[in-house]
Length: 110
Image 1 (spheres, rainbow, N blue to C red):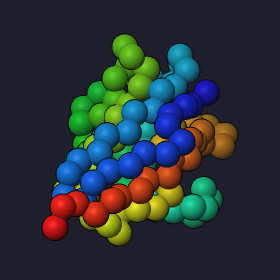
Image 2: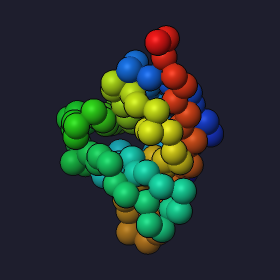
Image 3: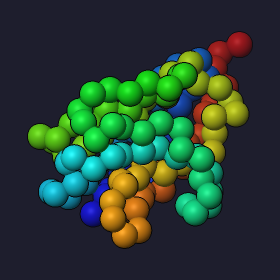
Image 4: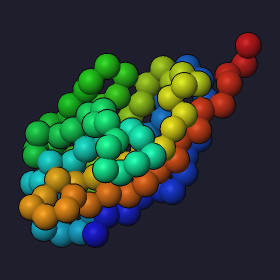
């Protein structure tokens, strides 16, 4: 019901966008991006309001597109320590839906 890239790479100081798609029926659900290998205890970085309005928290923003049934997460001014396992997820009644994404940040030109 939710799908996205398994792994993405970015470069220090640049930006990275991850796009996750979902099935019909989840348009108005809250979407979120959370950090940590363990799905049960990952830390929510940013979440939507259940609308298509962009939400920004620090260097990370999320925007839902109902027509496309996808949402995009953009991480800006990347740092090496942003490398981690993240999840794009959908809040719903019952267990949330999630897709695991491994994010690797490579050093930029020194």
